[in-house]
Image 1 (cartoon, rainbow, N blue to C red):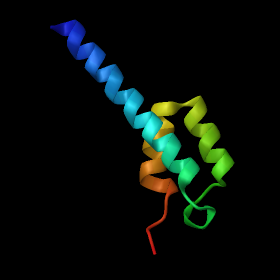
Image 2: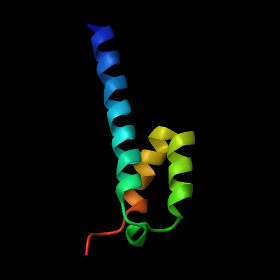
Image 3: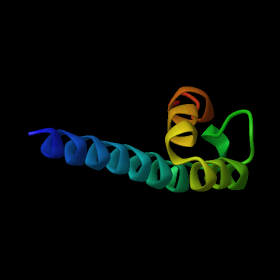
Length: 64
């Protein structure tokens, strides 16, 4: 049972990080806030969980 929970947790982290990475790539440059898009992508590449959370909360501006 514990092994299944660990696998589910790892799968959740991978899905969330991939979603943030693809979302950053597909977001127009006009909606990116605080840092340039290549810096956000580098942050998500080097620290996937932290970068994904930061992108979700700080990186993408509201839709117009």
